[in-house]
Image (tube, rainbow, N blue to C red):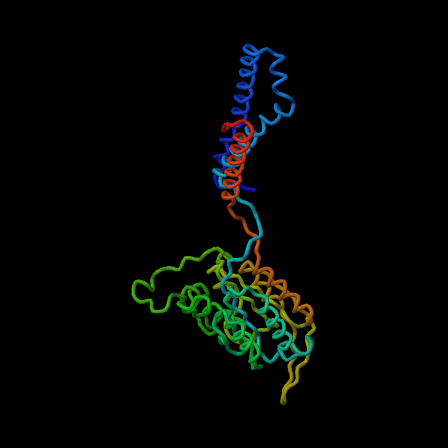
Length: 350
């Protein structure tokens, strides 16, 4: 446990002082009782249980005071709470390499099955969007709460040529920030920093264009996340790692799922053949840059397990949270109990 205002912990020094004052008052009261009543009468009037009970309300009140003093220091703890993610974008690779059967029945069919299982378990208050990408990327389902629309979009996916992982990421970001124009093309001769700086709100003109975008810490955006599923072999479009840098600058986490086997498979089409294998390196870089995580899925059970894990990660998350309210509530409750017991047993408040 940590404290946002640790300097207020000095107030706890008042606790031993109060304890000393309490025992001092007890000693003085005992002397007065003996002076006016006689020692034998006092002992007879106050049995062992009665002498013990009279200390309980002050003890509870002392604990209440400690809890309230700790609350003023704003304690914080790392606890597991419902996630703040309100939107999840599922970016699914539909390139020709996804027809490979090294993941039965094939990569795309296994991915669709895993995505369907994931969608059915996501909390109903979370919006889900679907992006498919091959040579280009498109949003096949805008973020929505309607699960039937999401599942229908997943079932409609068709294999296409090319693999533009970077484009899939940019379209996913566009789904989260529709007011932003992300301009990051592979044939742009400008330096990377200048190309990435040219992402600004749509409609900006004049002085607004000159307003410099201020990046946020990677992984700090808690309203949305992207789940990217692909075999990782980019053949066209913008660099996926540079696209991930745009997500990182906006705090969006991109969880990557690599589907396939490292050895891959030779896929044969109408008059063509190609060797397709899982390229994990860019997927690991994307996840690392956005403070997310990379998952490997070498077969259908692994893929289903990955999406189950992702569901739990996005539904519940562990983060540092201020718990001052807990200490304040505990202090108030203890003070109330102390007052009630004192009234019940001694007909007075402490």
